[in-house]
Image (cartoon, rainbow, N blue to C red):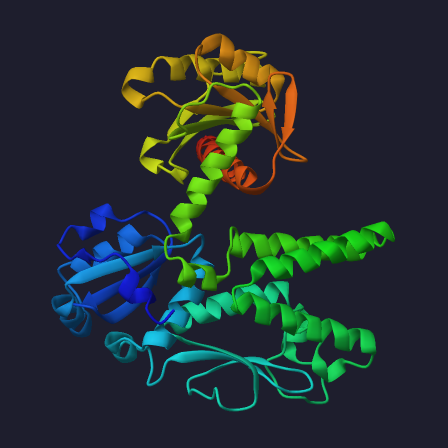
Length: 432
């Protein structure tokens, strides 16, 4: 980690440098020659860096930008990862303008205290040398820290208060559960300490370890038919996946700043190998398109086309289709309509290397009838598997990661347009 920032590729700063940056989460570093002077995080690197070239900047920010002559970035998988990685790098390098750009007199830290019932608290003062179970930070933005802690607390409730005689206010809304003020059994004690242990792993970036342990617990409860406990853990897993999916330990990015792109390449190669094994004609997998249908009881049907270039969502290439409703129209009819409309735009929209259709053998057959000489597969759920001819291929590992990400994005994009159409119908009815 000592030489991480020195080893990063550095691009000379120009007013339009942001145009070459990806639209996704990551951290960015401003350098004055070889010295890092500011480290920041972003949900969208391109948009965030572009803001530094606005006309109106705060004086300190304007000064920093005027001194910086190089920029580097590390792409990560999620906003959560970018927050943790930003904190680790700031703590290691303490860039000059991170020290100045505080939203109070001191930056914010997260402490897990070393007590009978450890508390998760924030502090403005560096008390790392005090007796702590764990210590994280500094974090340059208190808003981000409190947001992350709120998300974590909904999954793994914790206490931020000292021991007392009455149940705390948060215990009544499930955010301090079990409340240390009311713990009387060994089972409650273990539950609380397990929550603290999971929080510590999450803040260290080791999300997969927490998820794997939860999945084992859920399976164990299912085997003993304790379905209520199994359902509770399933909800924890879902919430954890929601805030962190996908996730890798932040130390991996420190060891390999190109991890994001390396992971994308592994996913593409894994999927390509899988398809070739089933005798499909695959050259490159540069452009992958996925299509999904959304409707409510057959009404206001829409379809989405999402496009991934080199394993990365290319949102400028997305398309919505408003299905032309006809009496008795089915999902198959909708799919055929979309396939025909897509076929008309091979020249101006580009030719896909792979088409993924949300559905089974019937939907794939329809597409093959309308779009010939292209590789087309379906995707089915529970468990996630590809439909290739008569075969149902179980997905796992890197191939699963890529296909899931593409399928989930197609779902999201189709639902967004569908909800837009539904809201227009309701507004019209309200006005009549």
